[in-house]
Image (cartoon, rainbow, N blue to C red):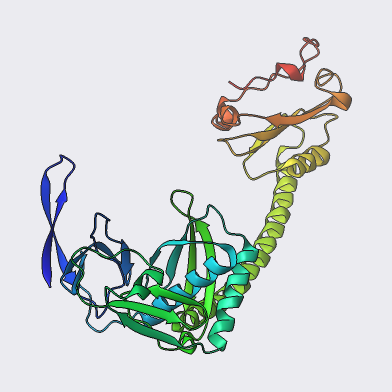
Length: 363
């Protein structure tokens, strides 16, 4: 039913929060009472902001309404079983738990839980499911001495009616207001998915129970099928990429030869973004640097690239061994942004033999 909850705003003043009071067949979360705060959790991924008692009825305040008739017994009984086994085997205490539509979470009072412990807990709980252990619910009056022997939280001051004791035969006896299966066989199977770091040195244990396991397997199977086709598509793209790279290399080689025929017997300044060191070497080898002065550059104009200086022995005597100097350039934009008409190559002449390749200047 529609309801309103009083909260304290950022300015410290009370504010009204609109939502819904959800009444469950039995309580999953303990209400506020006896100076203790209420439990917090979720129902079908909907947050329960507050739990209060009205006599024997518990009002769960949520921001969203819930459809009547939702059943949570399998996950709840699964939580009881995991909690009991984790405690008995390793002393791992449950401090809270969260019921979800896709999976549920148990918060354990330990900074870490090992993979071996998780595997042992999972094996033990599923053995008990296969053993078809009965689950019984016994109602005890408040003055019954057996109440003090049952594990569970304290009761609110205004609690009315009997106390519910949920017992998994030979495993656990726990005070609980929630609904449960009457035999562990109804759980079918429990799968612990993963553990993760929780708040304040706690560990969150995420698990599936019953049909949740089957649904999860179906989802993973569908994803695996999609990934199978995805792998095939990636392989096709990789093969096509290799094909394009090979074609691109052949085209660059053809282009280098074409440039050689166009520029033979003249001083050469050539920049090609898509080129590489092989592209420059093809041009240098085809033209021959004995008579022709070369200044070749390749690479992205916005980044680093390569260059090659080569020419006649007299002109290139300061350029490097055998008249060739090749290396990396950190900035290509200085060269690439100049037009061919703006470039001036100063070459040695008989009247000025002191000038060499080191005098190359890009205007």
